[in-house]
Length: 418
Image 1: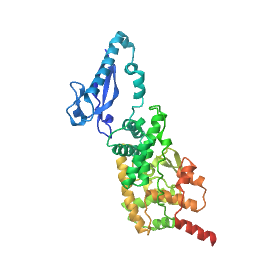
Image 2: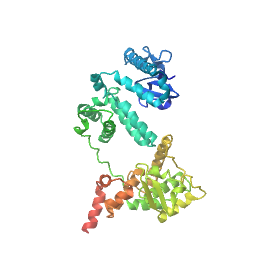
Image 3: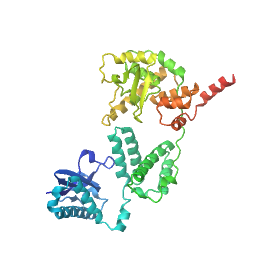
Image 4: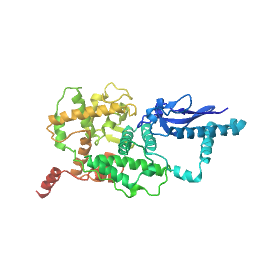
């Protein structure tokens, strides 16, 4: 016989990363279990495990109508139990997923057509945003997940720490967010980053038929443009100076110098792709790897400098061994390890820049900018640069190369008019 009961879903994977609360759910058991999450959440302390209801006396539930929600929960439980009784012996011919669907259909039948229209847009930023975040984490894109999560947190904080329904989002609210953040001195790039995350979440809900809206506020509100960041590129001469630096073999600076030169030789390979390389990625006089950001396969011919550097790292390695001491398996679980690697590499690049007489800010991102800038200065077409950087479109590369700094333009002018 099938059974149903109300529970607090306290599995670690169910915990809301923003509110740190757990969802209330209907547990359905029919040969195997299924969980139907309900749009309410609380802490372990806020759930009465004996009476299967929200506690009215705890702090975490102070801002919600416990009596009303408990009645809704009881009604849903009652409808599910009544359905099971109606099915009787016929339920033995029904699998668990069909039963869950029948329960949901019964719940929907209880809602009047007029009320159903109002509830159809009840999806909230926090709930739907968490779906997007979870998808990114499951596909090993923790950096994207972090970006979405930061955007959600920032917007909810602006909304007096209250979640909001996606259909409540309007142009006025977006403008108010922008004005408030500007008044507090937040940079346009930071404001733009949050609003682009919110827009992506909102549009995903529309595209997946999760909400219906009469007007999309992002069609009438323009997200502030990000300020043109100062170019981080260094010159080809700077790389020549880096090549001349001598550090103790196998020291942290020695490895970091090698990483910088490998990235430069590999058409500005991203650091995250570098630290994921294994011996098996090096074959047939080339490096084969997939770009983490897009998943696109890339292949780079080994230059003479690259061959010389890699000689130190290929010795006594099996095919599945990581090439470098700084390594990352690409998993969400170890993303914090990668962030630590990135921080330490950038700290050492500062030292290398000083030793090489480089005055500009020098990071792993500088290396990527440098290859593109040097290539453009040498007259290489944007199409080839785009292919080399692994960009999915020329537009991305054109934005990337939108401006040279004045010194680059001055030097070009000297060469032209000489």
